[in-house]
Length: 350
Image (cartoon, rainbow, N blue to C red):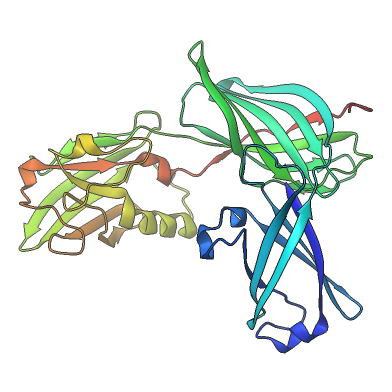
């Protein structure tokens, strides 16, 4: 992590933002716009002080090794809409982290996953958590939502950066590092609140019949296709879900309807093999994802999707008998909150 602190005077209040708000448009190392790797995961903290505002930027160092005695060029293009340019060359020095070795594991046999809290690294401005996850299914993902210490302080976590991963004895082991709220030095325990996002393999069916059922591989869910009708340049698929909880809230049903606009994928069967599982971009001119969703009956989760065969997305030489419907149940299942667990922090580990 890189931390940069600074001060901007109160003339910044003459800009476009509300009083007390300060925003910077900037780039590092003469990069341009959003392509700047220093901006990934960058956060800004603003504090009002006499005569202006103190600010702190926290960024992830974007390179694998640290260059000693280096400087970081910064260009601020505008502040609160007030145009610059302001240019700085900031010297960077690396400080040693203190390392708290924890190495405590929590298992969830019913979900066939484990979490091992390995270390917490703390520098002057930030802390990071190193943790390992073990899963039966490679694409399952475990996130740590928050932690609460023995005095009730809540710690938040960023997105994890993968450090390593391997398949061992039919289980998938991965180690990640995530930034977290700076650890209080007098903390004696942390209770972690993890959640599990289940990956369900995609299912598919050739549209050579008017009705069929797609079954989830891991979840007790089904998609019953009742009818498929082609009307000129429109393809209408009528379907309903089976196995859903009868207690779905209005919010969950609204999410369902929104997700259905993107999760029914039509693909020319000759091109289905060209979709990379690691980066599943649909083949251009041979697939259609966008559709208009109509809710027939919310109580029975009954919907219709209409695909425009002559729209921006298209399948050249479209024929029903040559088209595959692919569906991913995973995006319709909310992440499962796992039982919180507490780890005791050792004293004096450096």
